[in-house]
Length: 205
Image (tube, rainbow, N blue to C red):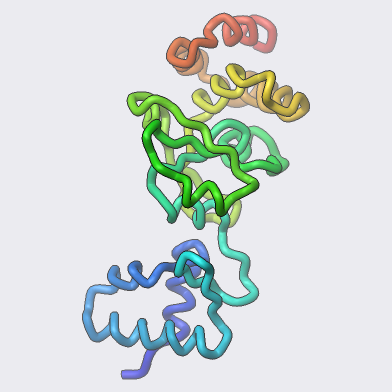
């Protein structure tokens, strides 16, 4: 058997355009695993693959999905705030900063230094997994994000630190097109923005 370079390139694309050597273990057969490791080496040697500073491989000339790349670093990184709103289709323009929420106590110092375009938000552990859903990244790969209600409530709570233009677009989009009255009220109580949410319900419905 010869190493199947075409198979491995397809496998890397299915993984969001980036792969770690450890993910080769998902290939069940030992012989297949060995051959794919050899293929990985040959692709790197030929310049078809590039390797980043964290040991991840990505295809030369193909920019890896940054959202998938970030979440490969830890399953505790959840896209939130304006980034969540963008990924859920509440706004069309990609925010300049990537907003990520992590539970209190999570050590992300090694991750933080690698992303100067990211803002990390800490939240209480009992709230961290509240509203986590799966959606597609702009490149079509599965990523984890907070649901629209949590994103909107946290944006309202963080209004003074949110770009005014983005804030207005997100509020109008949610209350005008995506509104779930019962759900947004439920989340508004959890995140202490019930008064503001009720005001928007009266004004924008």
